[in-house]
Length: 118
Image 1 (tube, rainbow, N blue to C red):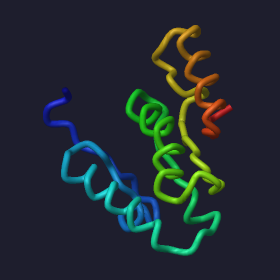
Image 2 (cartoon, rainbow, N blue to C red; image 1 turned 120 degrees about the vertical axis):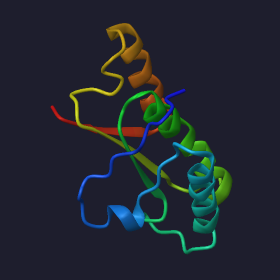
Image 3 (tube, rainbow, N blue to C red; image 1 turned 90 degrees about the horizontal axis):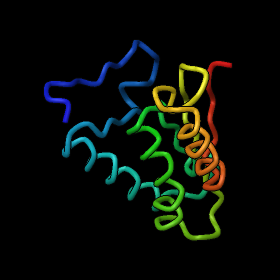
């Protein structure tokens, strides 16, 4: 547990209004409520797309769970898109090459896309 940690939000237009964090129970519940509210909106590519910022442990865990969670809310036939944006060259950069390969393989199998510095 990272006590005292705090999410840093860079000065990116729209980030404060449209981004969520899951560091605290209350903020994670706010994110879940938002996902629930999306199901009441018309199905569009924008509604069906989630971008996860950061390819560390939490980002990987969230991104690999989101496709199933979105299909549960929107229906199994819904085309969903989950994109992990990572500032490094690979997701899971702190892990061994073998583990990164497993993460990348599992992510691809789940339909998770990765946008990283290459």
